Amino acid sequence: MPVLDIRTRWLRGVRAPDAKIRLVCFPHAGGAASHFRDWATLTPPEIEVIGVQYPGRQDRLADPCPATMAELADSITQALLQETADDLPLALFGHSMGSSVAYEVARRLEDVPGRTLAHLFVSSRARPRTPQEQAPRPAPTDSEILARVRQLDPEGAAVYDHPELRPMIMPALRADFRLLAAYRPTRLRRLGIPVTACGGDRDPACPPDDLSSWSDVTTKGLDIEVFEGGHFYLGPRKEELLALIAAQLS
Image 1: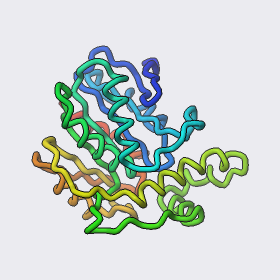
Image 2: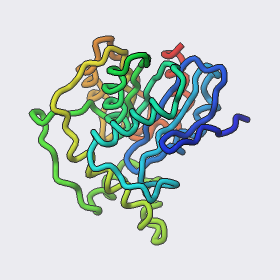
Image 3: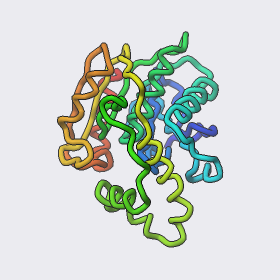
């Protein structure tokens, strides 16, 4: 069994001595790096899997949540450059909110000399919208947030009903939703890497047709992959998803 031995402030994962590429995984709103903990057991040894640990949750409960997408993406980019000292090529995978975070980090990494960015995988989210396409929204109320979470993840939403846990975990979820409501990049940047957009065939938040919007942010082509399931299809379809990722990174 592999040993969980990558543990920095921002990054968590399993060391892969034979890795030829590093897959950096960005969780959904309210999510944490632990959602990707077992991915290393389902990927070939040539792929090192690490999850990003956003502030304000789990062992980073006391760390303030970023107020803007730019602040979050800047911090993660800096962490990737400082906390991964080698020059392994990087591939990014983001689910839901994590898709937007991964895109913003990809934009920044492309400007860093000497770091190779190989692929962007996005999941269960349409591409970001500019202010001209969609104005920023007011921050949602807690009741609106929880209604949305219950719609998209009925099983996972149960934790927010726990009277002892809710005060500890609600602030991060609230901060993530506020960040997303305000996030509107002034312009879209076309990345010089391939993009693969994945989603569930019954996702109420991101119907399969919305995945094609990611063609606007790449000059190297978009691949669309639809799996059976809803917004969190990647749980029950994990092995299929990781087989796809491994094939595209080989």
